[in-house]
Image: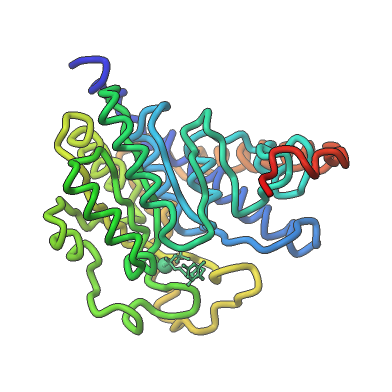
Length: 324
Ligand SMILES: Cc1ncc(C[n+]2csc(CCOP(=O)(O)OP(=O)(O)O)c2C)c(N)n1
Ligand SMILES: [Mg+2]
């Protein structure tokens, strides 16, 4: 293998489990901060969707690119965004990753390949195609992954991005987090197909439908797609079937979802699925996994406490890095 196509060793399930728990505790903590009115604006949490973020992130190289959406905390953390810098950003502090100016919907860090969390549905896809195309022209083996929801597949930019990526054979992973809802509307009320992967066939693009709550299945599918993209085999559409445990945004109690549906998905919580995998393989047990959860709880708590005591930005920050 050349440096451009080199693949890192497979991550162990325990590492991916830890990464998912860290995101889960982060999101629950953010919910608490909002309830205490410590965060301005709104937030879109991703409890239940951790496996997609973590599985794909482990298939990427540190210098690969991601674009994602307003529901993007999990993607930023999965690629290594510092917990304290993330909390400080949400709390509007000077030590926030974007100096407290971006907030929940704009957790970005180009050093980690995090090229933007887009609030306009579908807007991250063409950017990812551009990033992938640039890497293709430089022949540096980098790829881009763009994360979007089921709802985004009804947006024009989705189709334009899919089309161009296919024509150019650009190294892009189109990662659809199909959580069955766009805001308060079930997918079936807005979209004539149940499997969104079918849409890739219009662009002669490879596609896979994968259990998005099984981090191992996510990782393996993304690893395969990434390897193909790196050797000039073009883009792949990855549809991950998953579910958000909470409402669309913080003010949404999500009462529009049938109880039975919620129950069935909670039983397939990605953390439960990973715990079961670890225990079935005999590589861990309930007590050890509980200890991991506890240690991560302490780590997240320490990070949020440091962020809460971080300084506010100077007034002069109002006009720096702002385009008007
Ligand atoms: C172009 C555009 N249209 C409408 C909205 C309002 N809006 C924000 S989130 C959202 C739902 C998107 O659903 P989906 O793509 O499934 O992502 P999810 O929120 O489920 O992660 C909508 C319609 C927007 N932000 N941008
Ligand atoms: Mg959705």
